[in-house]
Amino acid sequence: MKKHNFSAGPCILPEEVLKKASEAVLNFNNDNLSLVEISHRSKSFVAVMEKARALVLELLNLENHGYQVLFLQGGASTQFLMSAYNFLNTKAAYLNTGTWSSKAIKEAKLFGELVEVASSKDKNFSYIPKDYNIPTDADYFHCTSNNTIFGTQMKTFPEFDGITICDMSSDIFSRQLDFSKFDLIYAGAQKNMGPAGTTLIVIKEEILNTIEREVPSMLSYKTHIEKDSMFNTPSVFAVYVSMLTLEWLKDLGGIPFIEKVNEKKANLLYTEIDRNPLFKGMVAKEDRSIMNATFTLTDENLKATFDQLCEQAGISGINGHRSVGGYRASMYNALPLYSVQALVDVMQELERKI
Ligand SMILES: *Cc1c(COP(=O)(O)O)cnc(C)c1O
Image 1 (cartoon, rainbow, N blue to C red):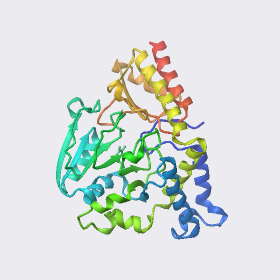
Image 2: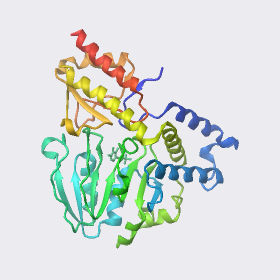
Image 3: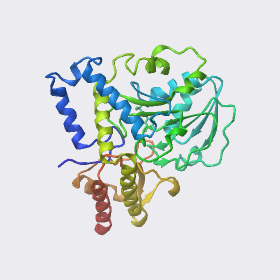
């Protein structure tokens, strides 16, 4: 039996998606050629790219809202600098909620003045700052919707009249939001959408007018929009698997459906963390992520026993990030409820054992 995969990224993908993807590697579309050995400009692959882009807009409720969808390479990490390269003319405002925000800030500083509107670094990023002001003259406001490493998640977003940019790498397609409030959304595929190798960008076309700097072709959103994400060879396999995952999500009932499942999974685990005296959560309750739950043992001496029980139960990938320690259970869209139940069962077994 397949393991219960709580990996933070690259993450679990639906079984049926992996099956279709593996078939396409051998024989794509019954063309008797592999998906990875055909031209990205072939009819078969262009259809994949177009379908993937259309599914993104449909699932996010952004059809006919003036958005463009791109699948680029370089990961969310390249978006840290690419967003700033294109849109930071003078001054930008950043909310610092963790490792990934900090990295985005470091890159943006190369392009202009940076205002950190608030930071939760004082408490090791265990909460989301709430009261802060965004300078009205900022070129844009940047935030990270879900902090994969620390396990916090923004439940609300500040009102800002200017451009809003959001790194949604680890919770895109997991919950309902008014996505039209964002002008630029980016997400590395490997957290909740597909394998590593492609990065989703959803961008409102009208903000392209604000670009002042001359930007090298590969780092220019305009270039990639003009070429329909085919300026250079896209990561065909990663785009294809992402498309399959989006199709899977649509068939299930889209974000409204998966949001309910995700809430159920998160509730099940957090309820046990709060009930079981052997465990404690690591972040402020109101800011807990429904994707990545961080927790520790109240008695570190139980670690070997707990780890062994987890291994016996086929639970994989729950070690906390090396910068935080403890445990982290990532419950992305494709993780079934029964996997979370398996983890909860082990937590209860530990309690019975001691
Ligand atoms: C994983 C992650 C990143 C980095 O993504 P890469 O695709 O590896 O560059 C950035 N932001 C968040 C929120 C992440 O979870």
